[in-house]
Image 1 (cartoon, rainbow, N blue to C red):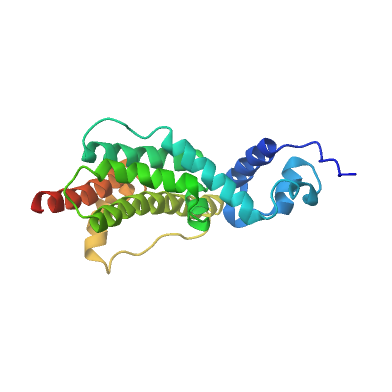
Image 2 (cartoon, rainbow, N blue to C red; image 1 turned 90 degrees about the vertical axis):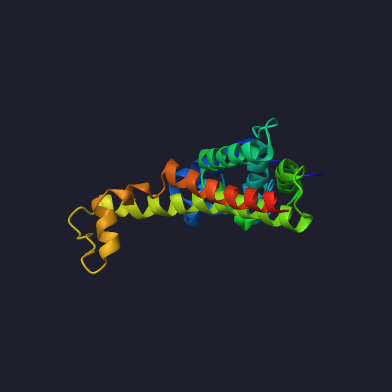
Length: 214
């Protein structure tokens, strides 16, 4: 006689996983902590996900599908890639630690569909297939890594705010250019929309130059 499954669902596990990732970060994510979040025994989760890696893969695939659903279908290649970069960043921010999840997961069908969608945007250009693949990879990797860096910056700022008595001042007197830029408030660009968009534009400018030179 087959065993009965516990009174829990895959959807509840996924929802609890996002909550746990938001609260504790991916570095503290364990199946034991997830079971506490769900108020079940740890083995219960293995009815649905045989390992943490399988769960990560499921979450990564879900994020890929969410991104695909909002990618632009109209416009020239540059307009679509620029807007796609914004969409991808927004979705990765919406789902906690999803940039890291994409990095830790195999590229399965959902991710392949996402990459295919991006490739289709640049397909009408006169670039070679090698260039199309490379440049699309550069754009996607830039967005993912930017979001991961945003996450790491937030982690760094939290303990600094919790320990106001600890000296966190960095002496920039020996670094003239950095000192000048700090005085101009340029350090506030870190993690900003402006910095993100300038990076995307730089990549697209380079691609456009190659397109025009072919």
